[in-house]
Length: 590
Ligand code: GTP
Ligand code: SPV
Ligand code: MN
Picture 1 (spheres, helix red, strand yellow):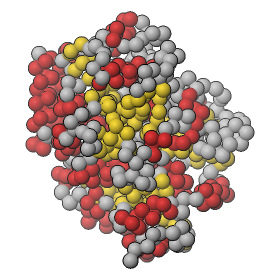
Picture 2 (cartoon, protein in one colour):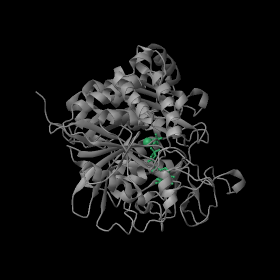
Picture 3 (cartoon, helix red, strand yellow):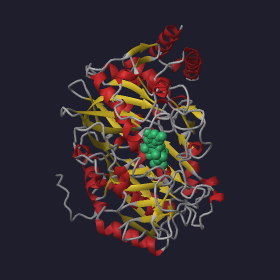
Picture 4 (cartoon, rainbow, N blue to C red):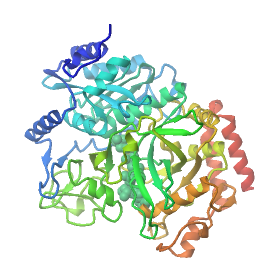
């Protein structure tokens, strides 16, 4: 007879399948000791002290940044490594042209050779976690085995980590297996492998972010997107934000922007002074799991419980909520330091760097003081705009879905899809300049469909069909929109003020969903006229506003030709309905 788990039960007894897996991993990796994480405050403090003792963590000024710490990663290990990230399905076609692929047997052999004996002299941490509220039917659990105490600390902030997660695993039986070792941090012995059919992940050779915190991109996006397809839901690279208008109605919006393109900022924006009565509630800043509800609406949970946010650009004028939230209990990675031991990064708005992210005396000849992908890890409850709706097991109903990219040219400030299928094309067509969130060139425009290019765990063609199928199940689908905060003038300056002023665009979006706002019908979708946006008190001239709200037919004809050829790369699997949408836009452009 099954008995309810008690808080006195030793952790390994809560789930025999987890204990067996830990034994087999220990036999392969040969750690000196094994530590089952319970997620307690005392455990986190002990790990922090361990890292402080090893000088892998440094305390920041306790007067201005209490309980804040700096970690420096290996200089070659500062971002996701897309070229070393693989989807290992039996058939290469199922991973698709959007992924690097390796046959599962080959990938396991390669990884197991790297893992053999790799934890000698180290502690193996067993990290049980739950993605999503512990009591939500939409949440999914996993266990990460890692030899990095820094990873454990981060997972403790970013996920519901510890005993409660392991108890749920014990009840449910199934969990995602994530095996991680920092190895020697050698870029030539670094791989992030996903086995979606086995619900498992093997990651070796990196201790950074999305490569190493396996609950985040590896589980909650790559593995979850694969599961979501078979189960009828969506796992997306989206923030979730609630917006209460002055009339007191709250609507939730989910937005997919590529890495380092503004999700954290939009999720916690502060309304401009000229929009009194608006309130903003953050549900999530990076990942959304979306389910068609019995009421025909789309419902979203945030599987995470913290933020792993970009530090540069975070200042009191751009993102006051984030600036305030990272003043205590925050783990910083690869930021610079002031002479009085406070964290510093480009865009913080005060102070001066004394020590750069590599620990050298700052010299501007060496480039930015903080690494452009330096980050903060902080619990979501520290966000001034946090809402307990983030703990609602049902999630929140979504009124609008918004895609966006970072494009200095072409894409207007905002436009609306005519219907769901057109919106899926809009998502599939997202293009954006690459950023420092992944290693490689920065500022190169590439297609990043639904902001999922690095994160979709299967063939994009099948993914677009799945999006179409989900829409067909929704009696009340959200409106679909595209935004671009990043248009630049010839002088390289941004044409739109962005940040808090983005609420002006979100307000138009919600009014469109409510059937209240005007728009012009253009070949690419519905655009606001300048007078349709609330521009009171806005610092922008009429010509600039007209420019970012215009559609240039010749440039768009070229864009649509490029979209058609991009979709063609997916061959016969590309949904016909998507190609029909391309044909409609082509015809409207003439
Ligand atoms: P990931 O965590 O990598 O998925 O990124 P994200 O999408 O959450 O990006 P984030 O909000 O951290 O923004 C990345 C960078 O873009 C930061 O340097 C921001 O200051 C900057 N940024 C965000 N919103 C805006 C905006 O509206 N306008 C401009 N010009 N910059 C912005
Ligand atoms: C991203 O790159 O989209 C991130 C940071 O959110 S990481 O966790 O490193 O993936
Ligand atoms: Mn992200």
